[in-house]
Image (cartoon, rainbow, N blue to C red; front, side, top):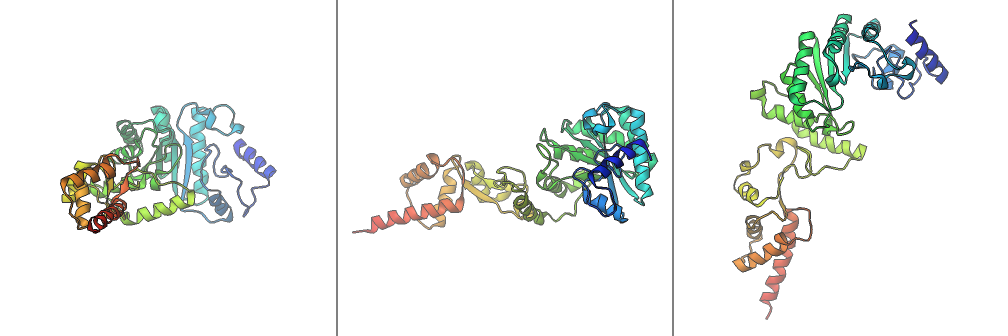
Length: 358
């Protein structure tokens, strides 16, 4: 048994874990990994391995920086040389193969800050050892689309088909979706995304954003998706319930006001033809468009409401209604058209009743 395996085995035995069929300890992922501190992301997968049932895919993650000592387990010491790193990757992939696993992905964490010679050595070592996929992670979200596309292009040259190249992007600059699309354009075969973009810090690439781009830009990108666009919002709401996440107001596709219009000139165009200011269609994503009343709304939407109520007002009355319900609104937030319509109806009915009284 190799020294790393002996150290881990002793530690596991001391904790009372390690026998076939037993549950793994939180974060205890070293059974299939000599160095890679996150090999299989759920302890249950390792438990299944111990039972003798081999999963279809196993993911091995390692750090792509030259001296990433803070990412290593304490028993490994302060640092690890490049040669040892390559050797341990080969050993880990070989061990996974010995378990009968044939779909093995090696993920290079923080690849966006890694040096080319190290990245190439790790990639080629993993492929030569039997890895079928290389995952490139912009772990800190530091890359621009041009930089990440260039990174994917280099890995694609070092790991040609049939080896797959996959992306894993973070949204620290708000560029996760753009970087992911740049990776696809540069030759990536698959992408790692998250519903609603949930993830560490600012989150990961949003599934719904990429799906929307692929659905609308199929011809120009030469790519498409079979994802059921209309089912994603319901799934997202269920996810929010489970993790207690508030719905964001302005997030693309899923935001509360993602398909809401409050500006007066936009509302005027939308009332005539929604396509005037709407490219992404809400119905395709299980959403509905809405006109919102706010301080930037104009008289056009107010006239629209009055017409719906089948009430006639002169210009002076319209000006007064505009002042009260739009220009000098007490609420700073926007309100849905239906809410304002109901309030306006009550007010106009009261006025008409007063006017009709003897």
